[in-house]
Amino acid sequence: MTHSLHNPDGVHPPVGRYSHLARVTSGELLFLAGQVSVDADGMLVGKDDAAAQTLQAYRNIGTVLKSAGASFASIVQLTTYVVGRESVQPYLDARTELFAEIFPDSSYPRNTLLVISGLVDPDMLVEVTAVAALS
Image 1 (cartoon, rainbow, N blue to C red):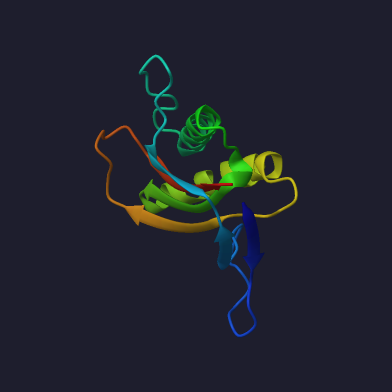
Image 2 (cartoon, one colour):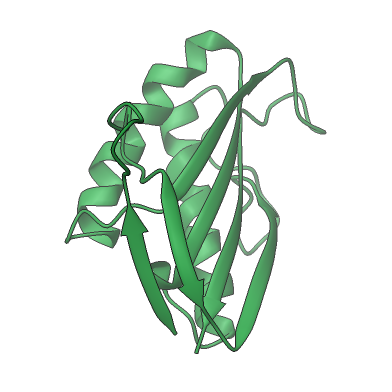
């Protein structure tokens, strides 16, 4: 897989940890279902804690990627759903800490962040979907 990131001239610099464009030549794409803060035992992690829920959602993404022979470096697109504006900053804080670890070269995938009124379970505050590319 070739995967190059671009922040083209004529567009504002990214307003966070993402790139405006990814050009991917790939033999296979992976489309991950939205991951929430439910652990392997089916238990919600981090009730009332958007930061803890963010970390668990990304742990789940890492596990799903690994099962397909991929890694965080394979991700080309993220879509994030956060319940309520009050959850945005805790989400961003947790993501900042986590991204330093999982994207150490600061090659951040595209990300769309949506603030919504709720998820399927009223205790869930964060859901993240991903698209990854394999060679």
